[in-house]
Length: 100
Image (cartoon, rainbow, N blue to C red):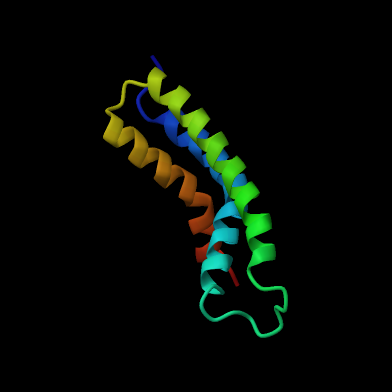
């Protein structure tokens, strides 16, 4: 068994660093879905071609890693997944908070 929470937070913090890119892509796609940028002549189809594979690969990596780690930890399932999501979102939140 892995210790309670340090491994969970550590692994998900490391996963959250490259996770900034898919989170940003999803935010940008959602922000421009209804009111698109006037200079974007290509529409959202090109964005979907970029976003879907990037987010899909990251989600697959995140799920495979966390399911393997969840089996080895002694945390309750609810606590584990909460720590996983928070740990993954921390690098993005830090970048949002310290932006100039």
